[in-house]
Length: 283
Ligand code: PAF
Image (tube, rainbow, N blue to C red; front, side, top):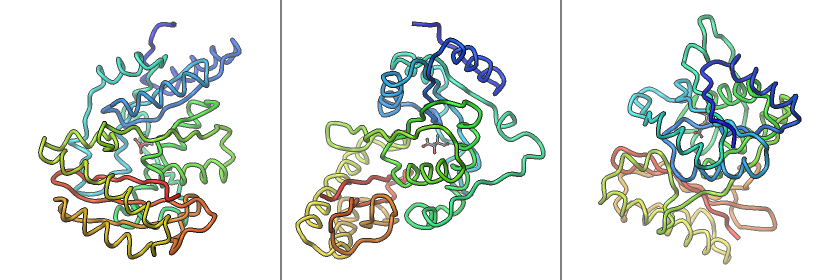
């Protein structure tokens, strides 16, 4: 095991990546906003299985947060994060400042049309433009062979795949299945905002979605099953539904009844201080 390295600048990271490349090593990248949990560790360990060296990035990207969202309260736990990256088999962390990523005069946007309009894009305008802006930069900065993203953010993953294809970015994008607690709750840095009673409520989210997915797969009309699931989520104690929708897994087009195409159910709902998202296969 090589010593763990922390890069603060793009130059430092690029110099090390060049050294690794000259030694014939492959590079895996795991972009994160920090606040790591075992879901992130799974991304790192998957990257370590596929690549010789793994860099995780820790950057709470201000451009993907809207007004009134949790930019200021987002967990910043750099020391613990680096330990978790190392324990999962990562070799380095890239932890840039905001001015390193967006120096004075920064003026470039990256926008993927279509896929960003629905689901989270509909209620978080500009969110995915911030994601594509920062992820395109990270991919170009690191020049990694592969980059790893969690399937919990399925829409984000679909958008990043489209962007990489459209911009000829030579990094393979790898989706990694969602890590869940023993009750099926998808792990998220934002779960840390919930108290014990809210966690109990949050654990109903995946149960209700799985049942809806099952009923749609069994021939139910998607819009009806999604409406039933939305009501059940509210009955379980959530404050507000953002969406519960059944869509094609790749084009993200709305689906009425399942056919041969890969279909998923997607949901976002508010519970106390947190906005939870999840998605499940309908098959
Ligand atoms: O999924 C996340 O944590 C973020 O959206 C990402 C991909 C690290 C970009 O800031």
